[in-house]
Length: 392
Image (cartoon, rainbow, N blue to C red; front, side, top):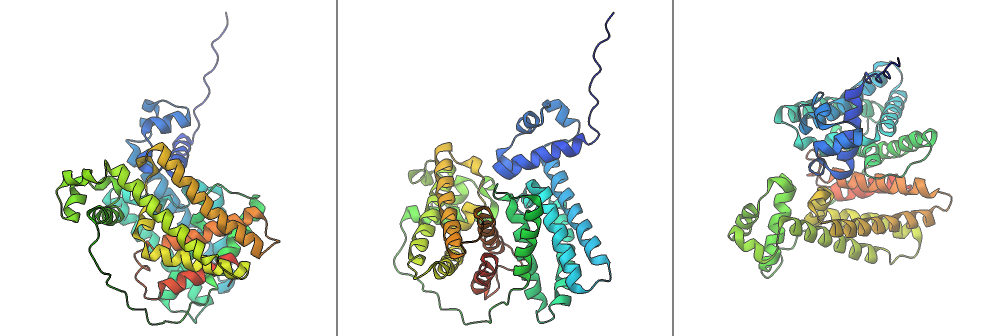
């Protein structure tokens, strides 16, 4: 009489495995673009099996994000616990953070940009714990660079964090033995940046004329999406902000998704125009400098750009989503090609990693509450991008 085959033992770390699968999906599609059944299917389990470990999708995100904070705290405590000189402590810290980013690439930036989907208590905990970690980093950097103010050192730490978080926004990779040192090199370039001195900001023009009703609706939607997120805003909210009744918004845009598509195209058009003007340069390095400066200038003066970077792609129709993704990739390819021409010995993959790190610094810091109000942020961001691109 034959015996039935033995059932394969259930992995002891099944909960962590499920969370890792979910983190990968959240990274690619955004929180609202992923359902419980999507996670279960990707993990090769049933929905009920997933519910044995997590109460809901929000609980999974909480587990992933807080786990990432745990890892960051552990790396920080280990690197800064020794009595080594400050330079060695910072080097150990950067190496640990770079290793963590490469090994857990799917959560490198989730805690920052998917955190708003968590319950208020968890958001408060993340702010408290990440703030404590950043304060420890800032103290270590100040010990190495006493010429900095606390605020300037904190800015550089935020930028270094963006270097590590940048690996979550692209799929380019190199061998691990090179990837970690490359990220450390870029973070060290950031922490070594000499920030520009303050300069008087030019007076902003007030503009003339009255925007069309369609432009008013688009501007209102852009502002609300930026403040609250796409899913927390209704067409009635947009109408009220534009000074019209909610149903009147449909005369200009058939849906919220159509508004988001229009925002994405507006951002892409303004980037393309700024790039075209910047690339009228006598040589590649000058062109790259102008391109970086044009990106910062456009980013800080184009609210549509900030909203489109934080957009949940699941909100857009597939055709528009694919079109905007193609435009975005073409824009990044311009940077990579120019960087390769400016530094002919630079491998193409490393050039792409550098470009994504530079763009992520600008994107992150322009949305980070603690630094985005700095009066000299445009010049500071430009200098940080130069550093990462090798132009410092």
